[in-house]
Structure formats: structure tokens, C-alpha cells
Length: 411
Image (cartoon, rainbow, N blue to C red; front, side, top):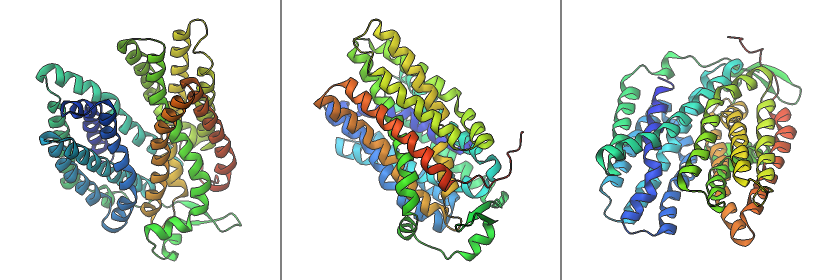
């Protein structure tokens, strides 16, 4: 009941996302406009995080997910029946909005229910559930295209996943009722004394989304910016690698193979990140991941015109996959660690908006630098951002995420 709805939602979404530009082009969009339609998904996610935080705080995780699933069905029907590019873009925007609400609802549930000793592993599994759907979804879409010969088959598959997910969440056992709120030791004040999370919650007056954002501005402007840099480097990887392959003159199949191997390495390591964070601390997953990706981008930027550039391309794509895999669940875990006890959903809406903004900005940054200078310069710039993010994690994780938890259960 915790992970299966996430897999269903992300599986259907992962099948549809690669086909959005194709559907847009069939409705008459050129390449630039098709890319703009696809970007409506990210814009919807950015716009959806803060309202989702408000909804989860008011009506709970379960009903937020049900509402998000039903509205996502309407978005899917809109994509299915779109007579124009405008309606398609609006439907994609609503889908991104619903994805933000669904993701935040599950994140808030895990924040309040999972004991801190196993929090990172649980949230790495949650991140792995999203990655599983996004990883398998395109293969499902390819199979449906081969059988039915139309992109609309993937949308029907998405609608089927949503129906099963909504029925499961609405009529299955409610984890909010069956799983008690975790009693978490937290640090209070500046003395480092610990208290019980439930006691702290009882002492804290309820707050809204914007008031919570203002009260937590220090952690958002410091640790939050480091987290946004991680999201930016992750997003840049998805843009730079295909463009790098094109700049080397590789065909689509070779590029897809290199990117697919990088993605497979990324997916294979998602649970290792949780183990490291629970056993040794958050910084020992965040810092190596950022250093690997930052150094990987910097090194890649130097290999475009050297001997055997394709070999270097494949090697550094694998390095970036390792770094991204080791960072699985970090943003979810850090957000849960620093969220206020009373109303975590309100804070998580701000946290996820900030990290999503980093991910949305990176492709624009890569595109702009490539247009002004070159693709290697853009890759180097993302490498610098990665190394600065590593420094930010080293500086701010020890301050905002103290090791106040008991040792992790070795099981």
C-alpha cells in the first residue's frame, strides 16, 4: 500500500512522457513548440508543489492521492482527445500538477511514519519506485506501439494504471490508519537537547504554507540551494548526454544504448544510497554523488576533440550514472530530516518547489550556454555547479541534519 501505488503512477507516466513531443508534432507543432509542450509537465510540477502541501496538510495523504489520480485521468482523457496543441499542453500541465501532488503526499506520509533509523532506506525505495516506473515505462510504450501502431495506446495504458491506483488507494487498507506516527528524536533549540517528535508537535501551533516557508527560510536558502544544485546536475545529465552523442555524430541507436546503460547503472544503485545514509550519515552519500557527477561533467568537457571520444563518452556516461544512482533518495531524505514536525507537508511543498526549480533551470542553462559558447563549456559549467553543490552539502548537512538518531537496524 505504500510502494505499489507509486509504481503504478510512475509506470503509466513513464510510458506517456516520451511520446508527448510525438503527439504534439502530429497535431502540427514544430520541434521547438513540441519541446515547449513537453516542458509543460515540469512547469505543472513546479506550480503543483505548494498547493499540494496545503492539500496534504488539510485533507491527508490518502485523499490527496485519490484526487490527484482522478484529475490525472481527466488530463489523460484530454491528451487522448486533444484536437489542438493548446489543449494538449494544458493536459500535460495538469498531469505535472497531479504528479507533484501525488509525489508530495507519499513523501509526507513517509516523513511522519518511518523511524529515522531506517528513513533513508525507506525513502530510497520510494525514489526507486519512481525510477522503476520511469525506467520501464518507455519499454512498455515501445511494445504498445509495436502492437497497436498508435501513440494513443500508451495513454490508454496510463489511464488503466491510474484506475488501478485509485481503486487500490481508495479501497485498500489505509496506511495512515494502520501505521502509527513514528516517535522521532529531534534536536531542539541551540543546545542540542533532544525531545520526542510527538511532544514537539503538540507544542507547535499549526502554520500555513507561506508562513512555514518564511519560518524555514534559513534552511531553504542554504541546504535547499545545495539540494537544488543536485537536482540541476541530475537534470543536466539527461540533456547533455544525448546532445553529446549527437555532436559526436553517433546514430540514435548508439546514443540510446549509452544513455540506457547509464540509466541502468543509476537504477541498480538506488538502494545503496539509503544504506549509506542510514549507516554513515546523509553527507556520505550526498558528497560522493555530487563529486562524481561534478568531476564527470568537467572531465567529459575535455574529451570532445581528443582521440577515441566515443569511448570517453561511454565511460563518463557510466560515471554520471554511478553518481546519480548514489544520490537516489537524498532529496527525499533531507527534506524529511529538516521538515518541521507539526506540518511537514507545508514545508515539503516549498522544498520540492525549490528542488524542482533546479531541475527545470538546468536544461535552459545548458541550452543557453551551448548557444553562446559550446556544448563542452555547458558541460563544464554543470560540473562546476556539481562541485559547488558538494561544498554546500559539506557545509550545511552537519548543521541542519545532526546525527541524533539511534544506530540503524542492521537488518
